[in-house]
Length: 541
Image (cartoon, rainbow, N blue to C red; front, top):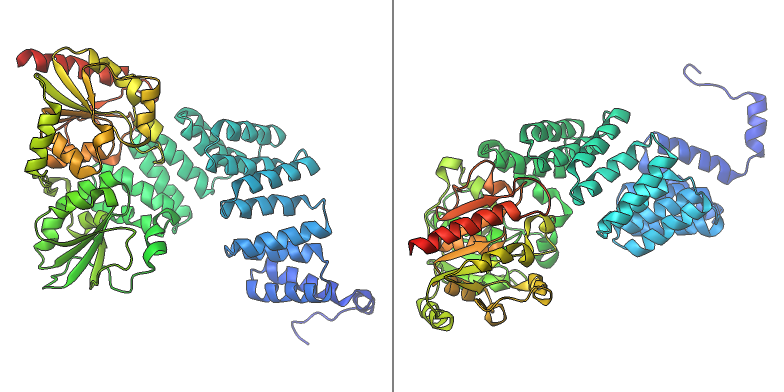
């Protein structure tokens, strides 16, 4: 018939001699290549029903499951393939990849090493091992295996693309740029390589070049959520709020922002977009760090202005502090279940977009958070002493990506304690207190960290101080929200709020910024300037 190819007698004879499962397998592979996933999966399963030890069918079915993010099923299928072919190096390599997706990193590392033992020149296994090591923050080991992958396969674009973000994590943005550019040269349409290049350019404060590279990555892959989110941050750093907030909202497509729904499930109530509430209850919830929650709490009076009743869900250490905000109906912990009833919901960090915030319309009136007056007096008596009273914070949350570049640590800030006439008060909480084991505080520093129970305590202490000197962490936002004079030492490539080339901030009128002059962990320049200014302040008293 027209349009069909008749099989020759010889072809029919060959086909008739093949086992049935082989014919089905060939058809499955053909459907797989045509991206007919459902048909291919059904045929692979048919092969395995006839021939359960068919390693290739198990492997190919694993590929389909992996593509559809059915990782546990894929892992079982790869293990099945390996059981019937213990030298199946690609099955080992892909098993490592799905174990990595399941966050079973040590198992993934073991499987990659087995693949390498079978095929020592398996560049892909080395590259994938590097990805797993990166997720474990074992950056030096990751760089070493990427170098091995590149030695084995100098034109293996994925080794360069995977190496680039690890080099950036190590603080070597120039090397990250070079690795990204090499990947792009080898594969110009690799969206990940353009994304990595943009991230490295951002670390160099080459913002417009970073924007261009992020947009190139998105043009190649329009649903690239990480690229949209990162682009939003750079646009906001440039002060382009109109374009920045919508891109920033892409964070909700990322797995890192799905934790709230894991606690409470997907909200059935609609997302609030700024309409009049007229007595309805709105759930507003923190979604990132505690500093972010403090910063965007400034929008709560604007929400109340739309006639709503606010239920606020925040990190437990913020509950007492936020409960003092006028007009809030209830404050609960993010992990409390069930939540109080509500009609609509909105994340705290979504409020700038809801209210169409531009740089000139930032609600920057301070204070917008209040310390308890009685507690403030109690802490003032606890601090006592004469002279300038200055609070000190030297480190943020180490689980925050990039914290080691934004936190100067106690040793870097120690020169401050040599300024005479100052009563220093250590406000440091959390893992940063481990610095005290190697850098004990001098006699002119009162360490209140062990006595602080939550941010309401920290606020009451700050309200009785003349100045707070801090790294880029939650106490910075708290001091700014209280209207306390605040000096912040910030990294060369800062959080988008702080923009570039300015010592003030449109978000906090009482904030002064001291910036690193180059990337890395050398804080001597900004700390030296703080020492100079602090000495001058003492002399004026």
